[in-house]
Structures are given as C-alpha cells and as structure tokens.
Length: 105
Length: 344
Ligand code: SF4
Image (tube, rainbow over all chains, first blue to last red):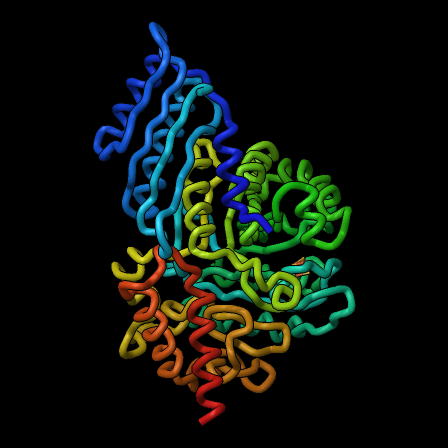
C-alpha cells in the first residue's frame, strides 16, 4: 500500500500555479538565507517556469521554509502551495530537500 | 485530547497542564478498526458515576486542571453531565472526545456550558472516515450534527488519526474544519493498541510520515484558524527539556497531578500513568479498591521514572528519530521492561 506522503507529494506537484515576476522576487527573498542547489527560470521576456531546490536541516526549519513559501504563494493570490515537494533524506529524516516548481515545464 | 495549542504547533507531552483522562465506559455505537480501547456496542464495561465523580475530585486535589472524557462513546455514559459538572465545580477545564454521531440538538444543549472543547473524531475524507469507522453513515451522521453544534457556541474541533497511508487527507480535514467553523484540528498518530493490533498493525506512521504531517500542519495553518496541533515530540524538545519527558532521577516534590500527566482512568477502574493500556505493574491501582488520593499517596514512581529515563536516552541519542510519538515509545519500553521482569 502506498504511503500517504507519496500521495501528498503528488497533490503538491499537481497544485498548479501561474508564474509572475513578483513571485520570483518574493521567493528569492524568502529563501535568501538558504543554500540553493539550483535555480532554473525559463521564459522570455516573461518567465513562465521556475524550478529550484535546496536543503534544510531538520523538520522545524523545513516546516518554517515551506510555510514561508506557502505564505508567499498565498499572498500573491496563487492559491494553495502546490508545486512544493519535500524529500526527507535518510532515516532518521534530518535533512530535507525542498523542491519548488511553479508553472508548467 | 489535549487543549488547543498555538496555530501550527508541534507539541510533545502535556507539560504545563495536569490532565485527568477518563474512559468511563467502553460502550460505543461504533466498532472502529483503530479503536485503542477495543470498544463497541456489545462492550458493557463502565465505572459507576459516583466513583468517577470521586476520582475527579481527588484529581483536582492532586493538581489536575483538565478533565478529558473519552471512551467508548462518552455520550452513551449516563453520568456524563454529572461528571462534567463536578469537574467544572472543581475549577477544571473539560474536554469530551466523541464520534459525533449522537450529538443531537438535545445533547448539544445539555453539554453547553459544561464542555470547554468538544473533540470529534474525523479520519479523513468521508469515504476514508466511513471505512475506518466500519459504518457507511459515520461521516454523514456526524457532519449533519455540526451546524447546530456550531450555532450553539460550544468550541469544537476534530481529532485526525494519522496512519502510514493518510497524511495527504489532512489538507481536506483542515479545509472541512474551516468550512464548518471548527476551532481545532489535532493530529494524533495511530497507536498499535486495541483493535488496531489486528486491523492496522502496519499502519502506525513512521518518522517520514510524522515529518510530512508536521510539515503539512505548518503548511496548512493560517492565521484565521483552526488551530492545528500534532502530538509528536521532536528530538529538539527531548534535548531541550528532559524533565518534560520525566527523564528524572527522583519524583518532583510537587503534587502528583502536576507532573505525572495524563493520569488515565480506564473503564475497569484502573488508574494508569500517561496513556491508555499502560502495563499494570506501573499502575497506581484500582479505584474500586481505594480512592485515587490514597492510590496516589501509596504509588512508587521509581519504576516509571526508570522507564522514562531509558526511553528518553534512546530517543535523544545520536541515532534517535527527528520526530517521535513519545507516548508510544514510553509504552513500548514499559512493556519490554515488564516482559524482562516476568522472565527474570
Ligand atoms: S474509536 Fe471511538 S468511536 Fe470508534 S469504537 Fe472506539 S470509542 Fe467508539
């Protein structure tokens, strides 16, 4: 039987968002203190797809970051925070990789 | 259940609140697949109301400030109103945990002013709830009671049992709670107790599901409510405040109810520490033999403190999990210890 978290990740992935420049600015701000593994922004002149990933230590920091991102998305009227994927690394899950994807690839 | 925490909080044991958890009856209109008290329509075991009332008075004298009534189905216990009134009279905050199906307008009116928080079990979407509860009407009956309850002004919330398979339904539960005006969603990890031992042994959530639930609680919380709370402890909590997890050499020089919490009265009259089903060698005793205040005065805390210290050392060590259901863990240590005592 599938884990609940596998279904949850799918729900997040399929959340669906529209990408705007001000969203990117705010996201860069809310993740500014983190080591970003990768940023890809596609689309010229208006970006229409963003993908980023970064690691955070511990569930508390993970929760705070996800909450910040969700608030940013919510504050921009983009609905719920689909497109955020969280991968726990290792057992016990002490490090989380957060992947954020906004817009269709 | 515990009283409401801060929005989106991950909480551990109930430090700060002395809770008396009472299971006055195991009679229930349902027989849920995950019922830790093995309750059901044909289970008659219950504690007479005069005895429960005395337990409540004694618990207040021991420093307990919160009475939580669960079951069985508390609405099937004829003395519920009397017990709640006693607790309120003794200055306690009261909570009742129910499956919600029997919350008729008359019962809601009776409970008004006697219950601070009414906690209703909700296990996910209507289909999931009905499947877990073993009754296709379990959701619709309960949901049909909510508008009158909300209008009554009694604060109510939902208790969501987290399994290995259902964290993705938490979002639905939170949105439903918001829609119907609930003030609280409490996420409680499934425990392999009672009927769950046979029905759901593989469904106790592991650390990954606990972590996702914690993230989901934080993600879905917003300023407007409901309050969200998840009953797990983080390693950070365990390291920061060992006393909260009873990792103590000696019992505190304070009334029992202020540090040993919850105290749990089971439907057979036994009072156990911390959680339903705690092994009998650690129990305070039976209120059919002596009043709670006498049992408390006679009780030797050392075996339990030894179990708590071992549990804490295991969980807070370098190999310990990031998140844990401390009650399940301390119960497991106690069972292993009882076994080793029996074998020796
Ligand atoms: S879980 Fe609650 S509603 Fe279900 S059988 Fe047990 S006491 Fe009754």
